[in-house]
Image 1: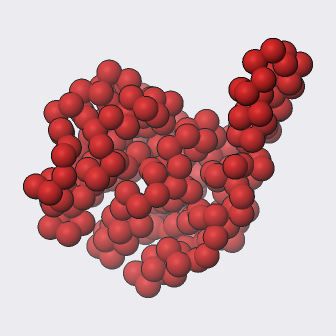
Image 2: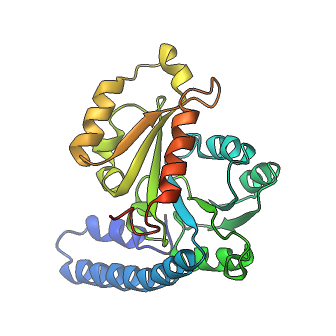
Image 3: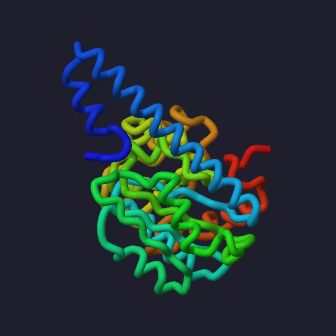
Length: 249
C-alpha cells in the first residue's frame, strides 16, 4: 500500500463503485501528485542535460536481476557512472553497488512503492551532479521493485528500461501494459534458467511488441554473460543520442 501515489485511495474507491465523489477526489489527488512530480522531473532533466548525463530508470518486479546487472555494468568501468538506489528498506543493494567503486545513494521509501522526482533530485544533489561530479557519465536509477506505480512517474530520465526475468512468465507485458508501454528497452534476464522453466520467448516478445511496437529488447544472463555485450553497446549508443528526452530525434 502506497502513501504517496494514491494506490490505497484507488483500492478504496474501486470497492465502492457508486461513490462518485470518492472517485472524483481520487482523480484530483492523482492529477495534483503527477503535476507536482512532473515539475521536479523537468528540473532534474534540465540539470542532467546541462551536465551531459544520460539518466536511465531501471524498473522491474522484485528479484528480476536489476542490481546484479548493474553491478556487472559498473564493474566494467566503461564509463563514468553513479547510482540512485530505491528500496522500501535497507541499503543492502547500495552497498553492493558501492563495492564496484561507483558512488551510490540509497533512497528508502518506507511504505512508498516507487521513487518520485523530488526524491531523485535530492539524491542527485548528494551525488554532486550539480557540481560536475558526473559530467558526461551515466546515472542509473534503480527503482523500487514494482511493475505498476513507477510507470506513471517521470524522474527526469532519458528512458525507462524494464527488466523481466524468465522465471516470471511471458505474459507480464500484457498484465502490466503501462510499464511496458512506457519503456524504451526490455531486457529479458536469467536466460541461463530457460532449460528449467516454462517460458516462451517468442510469445513474450510478441506480447511486448503488441503493447509497445517500438520497444527494443535483448536477452541477458549475468551468470553466463549472454547479452552483456549487447547491453553495453546499447548504453554506448544511448550516450551519443539526444539526452533525457526519450531519445527523441
